[in-house]
Length: 378
Image (tube, rainbow, N blue to C red):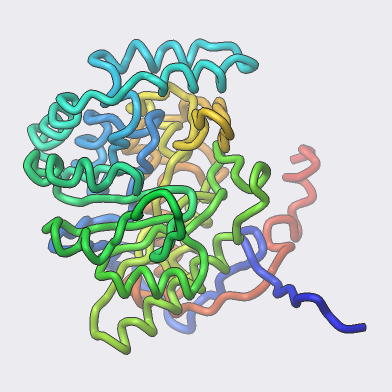
């Protein structure tokens, strides 16, 4: 029978495992730093532009620990003089009313004066300031962001491409944005080689990889779109490497979403990521404004919500989540300790070397020999 279309096998974090190296390295001798533009961070970790995760105080706290938090400039921080009051209403809402309440809270118009205020709060705290806006609002806010002293601009939507077709308006042209905004620009999200390569050709500096993998995101259910993160990261990393060979210019790949444990982060790096962006993982932190709750950037869409408010609970401080000591055995704390240890076990001294480590297809990697853990008999 003739085929209508061919399907290829794709893989997520639970489908693969890393092969230990022939040589091992002391974890404390590994380099896990990450650079974007002229900014270098000691850990390859970004916090998502989610209102439950990043506020100015959280951005300063993560900066002090070596990472980078991205503030959502179209969220409660720029709609309310007192965002804490709006956050409290979201957190306290019954589950069945949460989405409707989110839609109502996010219907309040943005206040441009608050944009500058929030940026100054981050800058006054001594942190690198990264902010996220949607493509629709980028041209409007770009001059204001530059004037306010933003360091890194993230242009983010559920799916981003270099070519957008519309009869009603002229969309955002990334090559023009790069020429007019003298900042490192990160764009997302995408999951394919071709899209990633075309975005790189516009001159942007980093790409967010992932459509729908986040714990609070329902895009895969609502729209039916998405590619598991290991395959998506590998495809975009292949575009990065080919683009580097063709132009000599390096564009960072940042895996965004779907990671819960140190093992997941390690597999993202081994799949080709230069860094990872974490959302609900950081919502566990006591410093997170969501106070143990999380919701995505598309949860409050007025006509087609693609997210849900979830209760993740508070597991510890931000420092404990990143550097330990871990009080749990499920891999959700001391994430950077796990990453360094995995690099050492695989014989990688740097993130670039870890990107070349061998991976195998291993869907039983989490269950093999784990009868007592799985049955609760241990």
